[in-house]
Length: 345
Ligand SMILES: [Cu+2]
Image (tube, rainbow, N blue to C red; front, side, top):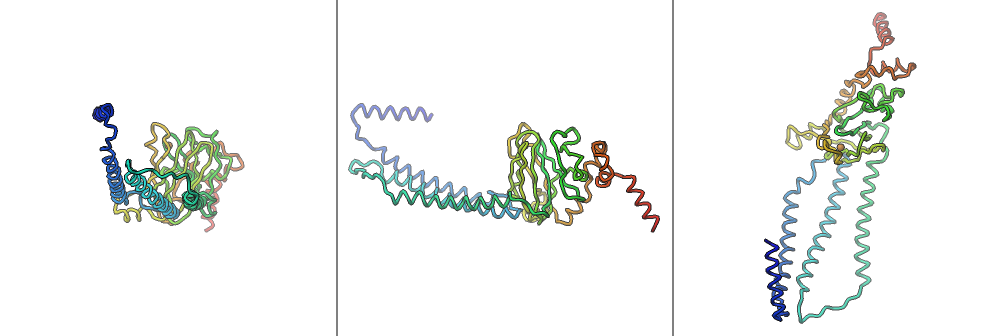
C-alpha cells in the first residue's frame, strides 16, 4: 500500500515537473515541520518509556562489586543520554530552521579550529574517564582473590552446569585433567593429587553471605558463559582456557525474598552463550546462606570419591589410606584407632 501511494506521489510530482512547475516547494515546509514533529514525538516516547520502565532495568543487586558496576552503568547511561538528546534536537532543529528558502544563500564555512578541538577533546576526556573507571572495576573483579576466598569450580557442558567444591578438610581444589574424564569422573579428577580426595560435586551453587567467593570457570565442549544477574557477574567458560571471577554476595536468598516481597524468589545462574539446542536448559540453582549455615552445609557433603569408591584403584598405594580418611570412606586402620581410644576411656 505504501509503495503504491509513493508511486502515485512520484508520478504526480513528475507530471508537475513535465508541466514546468519546477518552483513548487509546497512540500518543503511540510517536511520541515514533520521533522520537528518527529523530534518532539521521538523524545517524548523515549523519556516516557525510559521513566516508566526505570525500575525494571536491573534486578536488585546482591554483591559488593555489583554496586560499583551499577554506578558505572548509570554514569555511562546519563552521559550518553545527555549527548543523545543534544544531538537529536540539533539534528532536527537544523533541518527545520535551515530548510530551503530561495531568498537565503548558504554561508561558506571551511573549518574552525576551536570547534574541531572542542568536539574532539571533550568527548575524548569523557570517554577516557569512563574507560579508566571501567578498567579499575574490571581489575578489581579479575585480580587474584584473597587467601580466605571460598573456592568453587563451575564447569559448563552441553547442556548443564556442575559445581565442584574443595572439601571442608583441605579447602583446596584437586588437580584435574580432561583426558581423565569418563562417564563417572565428569570433572576429570586426577586422583594422584591428594587435594582431590575430599572434593565434592554439587548441583546447586551454594554461597556464603559476606565472604569473598572465587569462581573458577571452565568448559568441556563449547563456549558457555556464566551469568549471575543479581551479582552482576558474567564470565565466559572457554574450553581449554581457565577463567575466573571473584565476588562477595551481600544478601541471603531469604533476605532477597523479603526485599522483593516474593516468597518464591530464587537466585539463578544461566548460560548466556548460545551453545546449542539445549542452551535454554542450562539453568543452575543458586542459594546464598549465612556463613555459619554454609559451613554446616559444607561439612555435610559427601566427597566425590566416597560416592565413587571404585575409583580408589587410581589412587597411588602410598596415598590410599589418606584418601580413605579424607574421602570419608570407612578405613580399617582408622576404625581400629577409634576402638582403642574408646576402650581406654
Ligand atoms: Cu551453554
